[in-house]
Length: 273
Image 1 (cartoon, rainbow, N blue to C red):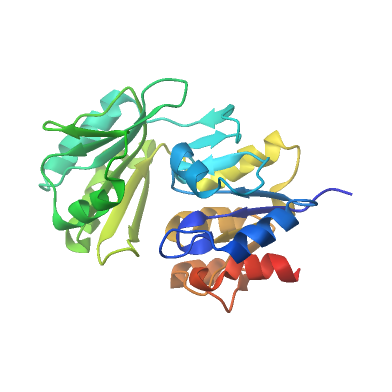
Image 2 (tube, rainbow, N blue to C red):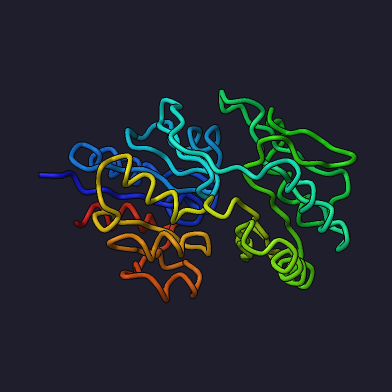
C-alpha cells in the first residue's frame, strides 16, 4: 500500500506567528512520518527551512522559494527555475520608475549557496522585513541593486497603491515571461509582489515532485493560507486551508480547518485522520 503524502506551507500555516514549530506539531509530524510522506512547499529558502524543520523527520523533496527550487533534505537539487540577469535587471529598471527597489534572492553557485540582495533605498515595510534578517550571512547591501546571474525571485514590499500599478505595468511589459504574485503581508500591514520564472510556482513544483516520486498529484494532501498556495490547491487531490487563510484561498480549498496556525491546525488535522 502506498504511503499517503502531505505537503504543507510553513508561514501562517504550519509555523506559528512567532515563526516557531510547537512541541505538539513536531510530535504529530514525527509520529505521522513513520507511515506517511511529509514535506513542505514554502516561500522560504533551503537554509531557513532547515532551521525550522531541524527536529522533524523529513525524507521527501522540499518545494522552496515559492516553487523555484525543489531539493531533497540532503541538498540534492531536483529542479530549479531561474530568472536570468538581463530579465532581472529589466524588472529592476521598470520598478525604479515607480520609485521602489526590490529584494533579490539568488544563487551564488550550484552548491546552493544563496545571496539576499537588498537596496540602500528602503521604504518602511522593507525596513520591517530586514529586522528579521539581522546577522543573516546571506545579506548583501547594494547601493545600485542589480540582478545576479541565477535569480530565484525578485520581491517588492510596500503599499498596495504602489505595488498594484507596478504589477499591472510589469504584466504589460513582460507578459508571460514571468509569474507575478501580489499578496498582503500578514506580518505587517504592507503588501508584497513576488516575481518568478513562469514555471517557478508551487503548482509546477508539486507536479515535479509527483513525477520524481512516481506518484500522482491527486494522491497528495496540501495545506496553505496564501495566494501562492492557490495553484497547488487546484492541482492536489485534497487541499486544506487553515482558519486564518485568506478568503481567496478558502474559496478553492476542499477543507477549511476550524483551527489557525497558532492553534496547530495542520497538526490537529494530521493527528485526527
